Image 1 (cartoon, rainbow, N blue to C red):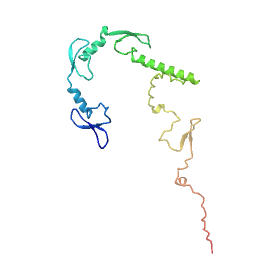
Image 2 (tube, rainbow, N blue to C red):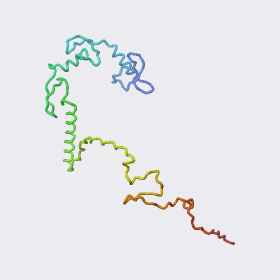
Image 3 (cartoon, rainbow, N blue to C red):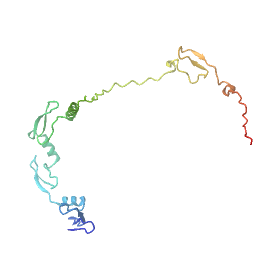
Image 4 (tube, one colour):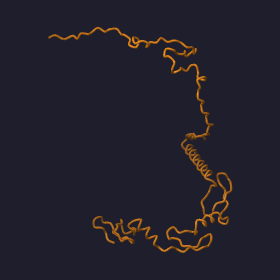
Length: 212
């Protein structure tokens, strides 16, 4: 273990692959060059003999993350065992429920937990508004889902209102918007002459040239 002449950092040798790596100072606890070497060294360590806390069977547990139960079945049975559970009272709904003595469960259901969190948030908002001398912000009300609207029925030719014009109707016929009676409109564009109205002829303007 010697300082790197280029960077001045401490050079160490990995305990697994013996590759060189650098650490910041002598107080660093790093002894492996990579997480892969660290996991390989942890897997090579001999397991620890332990006794299952539920069935009493001996089993081997890894040194890292040691287990308390020999199997998931024993862990689930221990959580459901009446001897290891206790009665608790939900602070939100005041109902009694059973929870493992080693757990930190406070509410009986996630719904009660969310309601308690919302109540604490409202209390904080009211306290902040009281300290600042302002009125608390309006809270959104629950939105109830309205009944689905019925699908509109397709219109038939007989049920079509009289005010709606038939697309095939001649362009010169319209319905009065007040009395809904058919009226005739002068077809302004019925003839080519009307489509190309003549305008007054503009006399030719002769450009005036300035003479020297």
